[in-house]
Image 1 (tube, one colour):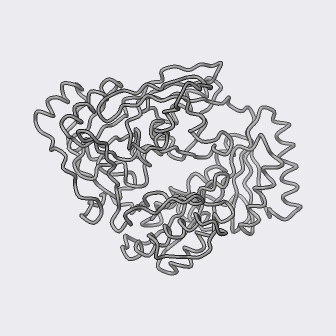
Image 2 (image 1 turned 120 degrees about the vertical axis):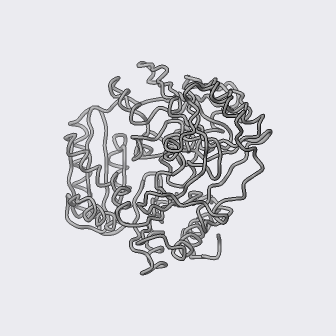
Image 3 (image 1 turned 120 degrees about the horizontal axis):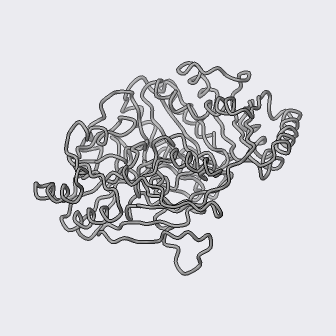
Length: 498
């Protein structure tokens, strides 16, 4: 989903919301066997509300009665409704099943909806008119952006109207003095990045789905990504939003002021709201200057404790030029080698780190990076590594981290989980899951963002396996929720908690 979306915009979707006459009610998109309610979010650990699986098949899984809540008493689409939408959106009300197909199946092809109408507005006024009408007619709506979400939230559960933001794709203004960009919510992240680079600026976030995710979905899911360590979350870089509420009213909070203390900061309600409060139609965001010097180091460690020691040393010695600190395990490297034929740039190690520095003085940054690497090697935190500053080599090293998701799609049916944990216990969930599942799983791999404690846990199997899923989810959600305890991380593996 996207637009005030669910984990879709993300990548690009936003949580599906259903708009009724007087209420905006969230339709949780649950996969078969997914615990309901979702795993509790803890003070110290947080689980993504859904997992999702990818089989590589061309058909999505039909949502069974056990996989989704019962359809709420929304109205059915009528010929009168179609006539209204066709008049409101000339050429933008689509009922062709072939064109609807891509919008009814999620990116992982794991679930399928049955939406019969796709709406493609180009303006906020059109979105407002659509939602006002749907609210009056009690019609359910599913916002959708790039449909790149990995949790099944970007497509209808049943026959909801699909509201696409793909044509809300205009850059409205850019101030090269302040670095503030204002654009519509359907702008693709990579397109914005390309536009800004021409102005010698960059977007404050970077995601693997940047080629298709929408900025509105990024905001609606409070997406983090590879640059969060350097530039912080979207709660700090987003300066203003324009949002259409469920009844069609437009909330204009599209400020371009870095400091605005004139009352409530209403935009914060919508950042990360996943579509439950309204449809984001425009965004203003503070963009940093493009760094003139970028270096990437790809390092190997023997233990996760050494990896954490490297992270601590890195923060101390690289300081203001540190822009990313990512990791992947040996199992990820094996998948990259096997399925994508990407050679390991260093000797085999249990853990790998991708460090990026960015600054304005190449000689200064190279000296700091050299001193850091010398200390890391001398103290035996790092056993091997390579450094790149050339654009081609930098991209090659980054591909070892960014293409793990692609490699997983070739390994079978994949159960994917995105969790936030205390950094010191980040990898323990991976090892515990491996021990818990044993030979029932084909592969259990872990990678993610050390800087913000975000782990991507992925489990593969030869094909869909309900018994395997039943073993995974109570365990993953239960152990993640235990980190909310004031006790030290991972006090127990209580699989009885949903």
